[in-house]
Image (cartoon, rainbow, N blue to C red):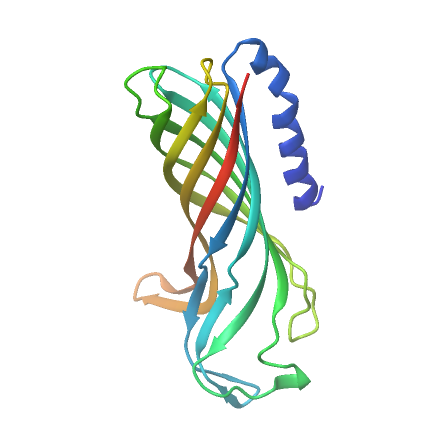
Length: 233
């Protein structure tokens, strides 16, 4: 099964669980649209095929993103949540100098890439009573991100998708309408962090155990500002 199919199947499974939770009266769905910014890591100068290539920064473009959160109400304003967020964007390099064109490839070209985030977490609302309309909250969670590139590398190979561990923290405000508070609007700010290989190899040697090598990693930090419609059942 491809990683894209796995993510789609997970989303369908979560949506299929909605009617059961709705019968219990503690279910909500929040479709969201937002803007995701940030994401990238620095790299140093290096020699490729005998040519010095300057360092720079691998960078994801800021772009709109789309998602949905399913919430299951607990006690005292707490919720268990499952969030899916999709960001179609481009990846490129901001060079520190003037890079050579290796193999006829434009060093300033950008490739298409998609990020599929799945986050299992929770949220705590701060309201004095169930009648309060404006409800601030904080939340967080753990999950994974499928990094799905759609371009060919310099060496002629298609870039492969990767699945990486993800950490998420978020907070925002909700405004609920009507006496039953079944509909509302949500403004959310979310930060996410995941880790990818940075292409650097480190060698460690010891007198007793010999030498070993491991690949370094880089942190990809992103922020997403979004608005959503809250629908409670």
